[in-house]
Image: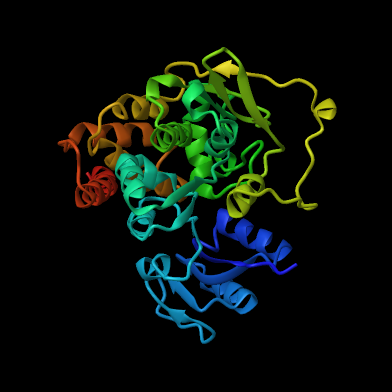
Length: 375
């Protein structure tokens, strides 16, 4: 049988999600044709990927070096190429906003791992997608689980329930957090992820971002979305329907599950490389509510998300700054809460911000954190 391969570009191909996308393509070489790859700093790995997958195009942010096997083009050019079938947005942070916006404008099918774009401009992007015919498919495990559970029953939903592992510091007291090392924070108990998302998991800010992403993607009010701490990370999310029934999606915590689902959607594909979920071996599954005050950045994000203004963009930019400073040993873990709170308090919010307002607010949040450090 003749298989028509999907032409795919991957923005952020050297990161955690990007490399796992390419791993799936290795397993199914007849189903995908790589048209473009991009990276931020890892030129060596990007060059190896270009040599293996033979894309026509590449982009790297921080190097002027060339790769003979492909042509260098901008991210915006890459996502709007006429023959692209799938755009994988595996970039981390606010840098993904403009490429996501351009892909939506071009009516592309977008496999979205860049939750920051949905946090900063989710309503704008969803409305634009309705006009252009673009499709946004989430690959974060919890929004992906929501998407799969609500398939065919969107009108009958009562509530969404996202699960959170609680991160690497879930059992630590406030006193123990004062001098916690980046190395310890980056040791996530259940997931293998990139550095920034692992830190955001420890503060639970990542979960707040996923709540906001889910609200925007699935048109469910924030008040109808709950979060439960689930240390085993087996139940990825649940949907409660108007008759009281719940649907849940379960799997071993492995990002290749939601990535592969989005890449082959609307079909499913057997993959012997993915682990089976043996419930008998797992034993019990545990759930508990998020304790108010335990995760200040989660509480802050959920509070300001109620308003459609520029504060969420400031939060995204400020978070990028503090996480980088913490990972590099410039500030302590609890300093992140203080610096983000001070930055939020200093910002004059803009109601119904434009795309340019959103970009500027994120940059302002990032820069303001560094100004506070220099004071």
